Amino acid sequence: MLKKIADSLLQLVNNGVQIILATHNLFLMKELSLQVENSQGNLSAQFFSLAQEENGVNRVEFSTQCADFIITTRIAF
Image 1 (tube, rainbow, N blue to C red):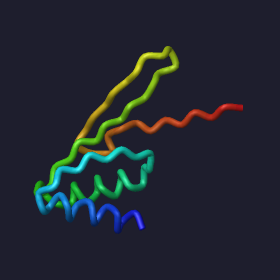
Image 2: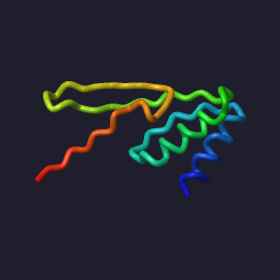
Image 3: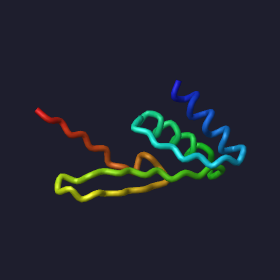
Image 4: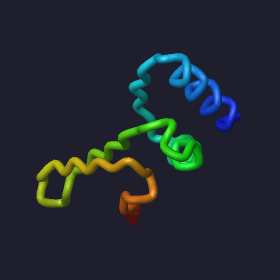
């Protein structure tokens, strides 16, 4: 299902539509990132990550590849 969503979004991009997407779904982000990488420069993308540090400071990271982000998981007991 996520591959179909990514394919549809990239089809829109190929037709000149700019897409701004907010998601918490890492698998969708990775699929989009892989397809952009495999396009050999025909597609471009920016991925943004927003996080709040433990000290309350907000952090913004961005990259052209999803894999550049450090994924952290907090587990509370």
